[in-house]
Image (tube, one colour):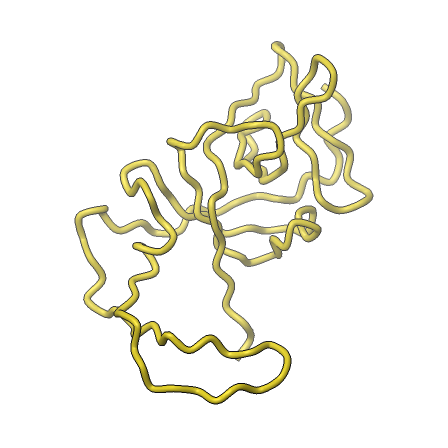
Length: 153
């Protein structure tokens, strides 16, 4: 395997609730869409109660959350401290962002197929791709299907 310097994308698994447990605290989703440019008049119409699990998870039995540590995926808008939604039932394809175990270390990278080899590629300059071959101790844990971020308060 090529040089694995600066792999700093260790991931921590966030506590997971059983799929059968629904959130007792659903928040209202308003039908108004605030403009990110010019202001628009708001309205008080509630579209529906929203459970973020319903919004972000298609297959609860195959889905888990992880918290990112590191900056190598900033080009994909994945930042240090973000919580990723990872689905193990989704097939990893060329271009998918995946959570993979490489030599026992979890990383989040973009899966790229180049010529006849696979690589795990960062989305920030200065990080070398991790080339995957049959001798490597590497496997994909799942495909990243979403993310959540809390802004500083």
